[in-house]
Image (cartoon, rainbow, N blue to C red; front, side):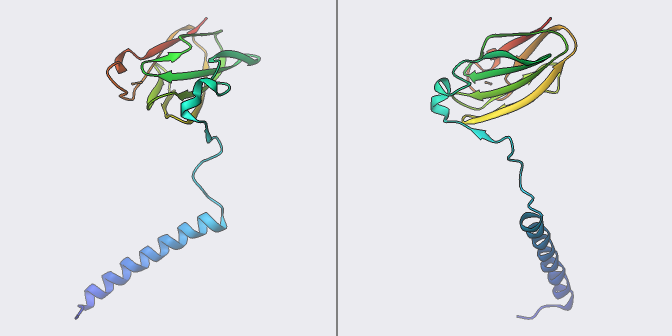
Length: 156
Ligand code: CUA
């Protein structure tokens, strides 16, 4: 097989770039210990959500001064608990999982927006400075009742 000189040059550039990328990737992974985020990666058995703590008792609990933890289970088609309430200025640590299929967890008017997957625990924190009623909706299509899937958090 005869290769034109220019083809040889381009081939060497291509192979050279591939080698550089692999070296960079290898150095980052093995020498610098870089890996995808896994610190908050908690999993549970998706078939035993209602028997696994803390999801066996969904609800909101105070964990400190103006600090709350909300344990929420998403399901087709709703969220447990149905209503959440905190005083204005509170920071809420949300801990959400699902007992069936992929759902969304989006708080309208905030930048809280998570995908909820069976067997995975999703975490996010948000400080509610303004009193009001915040709508929480599902933004992942999950079945015929998807558009009815919602709950609220009341900030007093
Ligand atoms: Cu749950 Cu869409």
